[in-house]
Amino acid sequence: MTRWRPTGALSRCLAVGVLGLGLAVGFGDAVLVVLTAPFLLLAALGIVHRPSTRPHVDAQVDHLSMHEGQGTRSRLLISDLDGVEQVTRMATPASFVATHPAHGRIGRLVTDNSSLPVLEISPRRWGRRILGHEDVALTSRWAGYRWGPVALVGNQLQVLPVRAPYASRAEAPQPLGLVGAHRSRRVGSGSEFSGIRPFQAGDRLRRINWRVSLRSRNLHVVTARAEEDAGVLLVVDALADHGRSGGLEGAESSLDVTVRACAALAEHHVRRGDRVSLRVIGPRRVSSVAFGTGERHLRSLLGQLSMVGPGEPRTFGRERPFFGVTGGTVVIVLSPMLSDAVATATATLVQRGLPVVVIDTLPTGMALEVAEGTDPVVAGLAWRMRVLERDQVLARLASLGCPVVAWRGAGTVDDVMRRLARRAQLPQVRAR
Amino acid sequence: MTRGWTPAQAALRITIVAGVMVALLATGLRGVWPAWWLVVLVAGLAVAFALLPEAPMGTVATGLVLAWWGFAFRGGPYPEALLAAAGLLTAHLAAVVAGYGPRDLPPDPATVRLWAVRGAVVFLAAPVVYVVATLLEGQPEPGGIWVAGLAAALVTTVAAGFVLAGSSPEQ
Image 1 (cartoon, rainbow over the protein chains, first blue to last red):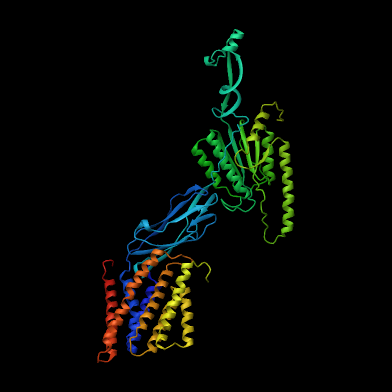
Image 2 (spheres, helix red, strand yellow):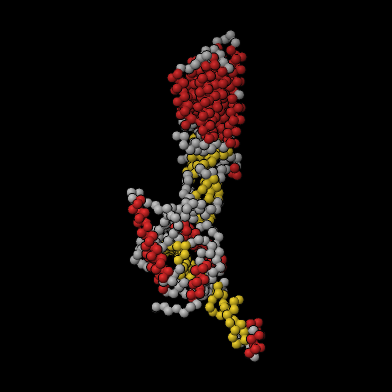
């Protein structure tokens, strides 16, 4: 049980004082009293200021959920500071969490709760981050007694992917919704000209085209294309994480590129008013977020992305993932395309007639990680062969009409979406 | 062992060693030098004291210095004792600051200033005792009686501290 214990300094003062006095009396030499007097004074002051409190120590983080790169503070909560003069915090480092001070250790004189040492924390990678445990020690006045060190368990942070700036002017190729920003093939009350036809009962008078009406001597109205929202399904391949992640400022692994790209796309489409859904192919078979809109839905999407971890489900390979996609939905698959199952599922979606875009999230110039005991030359050869196989998979997908683009931030899918939209207007033959 | 030391921590540890050695060698100003083996022994203990400021090595090193001072001189007191007291006190206070945390904990500047002021105040006890001892030195009575009296006075002070601690409102 924690209690106030004498410090080494107090013990030293008492021992030196007693020894010095004993030698002074034994030798009859006053010089030893001169050497010993300051130690006796320090011992007396340390003993007089012995605290009688039993403080309770805890740590609290200001924000438990934030984006990678943002910062928060970890504050100490001490129930009773009476008699406490100095507080020391020693936090162990956690992966992908930067602290200030950088070494996570800080000591300070305290007078009240506002002067307690504060640790600044900044997660450098998305995901669930568990802060390292820390030890906190309290020292009484004149360094006579010490409480602790008390061990505190680290808090868990939910770190959302970084809000990368992403903008796109591309419209969904086949929107099928209510009201949105995408031009659909249906005639409606949009702003883009569609055609001119004879007046029918129910048409709005302001739509009458007087020039054509006068020439034809019959009323004619201008029609426009409807603007609808679209459904966007984001499919995240979390079967494996290729490459080594260096955090926010360092190199990106394939899962880093995937999650951050997915977060940027989700935010962009949610802000445009589209219905966005998320499917994660990973250790939990398929985890998903249903279609939705709004800021709260965006938060739910980012929260699901922050929980993504690499791994294969136990039934992997025996079952084909089910996406539950309906018409009018654009499917964006974010994957390094190193898994045959994901490639097959993508091809299936394409053959169903859905507009599918594959965003290649394999980092360029990725350093190959070689397992211990493996010949690097053999590993490099195997990797090059695997990449060649991947290139064939990508070429087959492209031949099926599924465009594959590498993620490069803003405007990545603009050109692809425009081509898909033009293609959607052409008559197509599908096998059912 | 020095991996992870901040420059300020390194300075504190050097101060610990220097303070103990100054206290030991201060007798040399009177032409009385300690034996080489004692110097090596105290130096080794001082280094151990610097590496582990909360461990008992500091007490042993300080005790050996006190014992040397007891054996080195008869009569006095000598003003060199003030230098030795300053050395021992400086080493002790540097160990107090270093002992607030591990060796890679940078010392808080406010804490260092506080202990520097406290050290200056507490050190005043040494010249006060020196002056009293010097005044009492010329008395016809055997000096041992006066030393015992001085020691008794100081023990009384400490005992009063214990009594005060026992009867303080905190308890």
